[in-house]
Amino acid sequence: DAGVTQSPTHLIKTRGQQVTLRCSPKSGHDTVSWYQQALGQGPQFIFQYYEEEERQRGNFPDRFSGHQFPNYSSELNVNALLLGDSALYLCASSLPGTETQYFGPGTRLLVL
Amino acid sequence: SQKIEQNSEALNIQEGKTATLTCNYTNYSPAYLQWYRQDPGRGPVFLLLIRENEKEKRKERLKVTFDTTLKQSLFHITASQPADSATYLCALEGTNAGKSTFGDGTTLTVKP
Image (tube, rainbow over all chains, first blue to last red):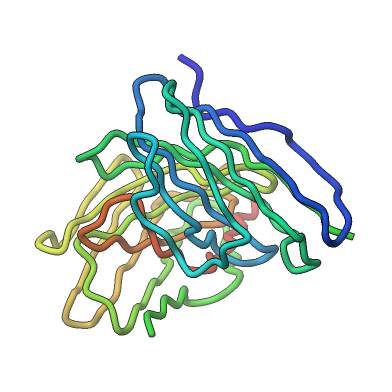
């Protein structure tokens, strides 16, 4: 059983560019959450998707947007990249009504 | 605003000893609290969950306590091993599952 997978593993962009990160949830999971983790800090919640709708959102600007597809996979889009967007972006999947989240390995984004 | 503090950034102990990590929170009434392990460059891995009406939870060499009066959780690893070396994160969850609020973690090093 494959766990949560994310692509790409690493990415380098320049300021002002746009980026799309992808996530495939664990088999059978239909809820996907995205987190941003800066170096030396804990993950910060960006948003959560369920049934192709954004269900919850953290304190992130509108430059951060997402999408969930019918197969439950998800994308995170970040527009107008800033240096401060450099971080590890984590995707986590879960089943509704359960508390345990399963995290993917993350995508390391570097903005120059 | 909600705040989570994990006792120290780094904890060094000798193999065989018990490691105790602390998670304190303010301005929050979590429905439950979770502990994760994170290795460098990897996503967090779920370890234990404890609910607000539970005082203690155990799993093999791991033990978690939860004191909602003190607003504190303690995480113990008994008979520690060098393989236990990692960063340990605590995360609080309200009634909306999947929107976890994480601390910045404590990096544990177990020396042989």
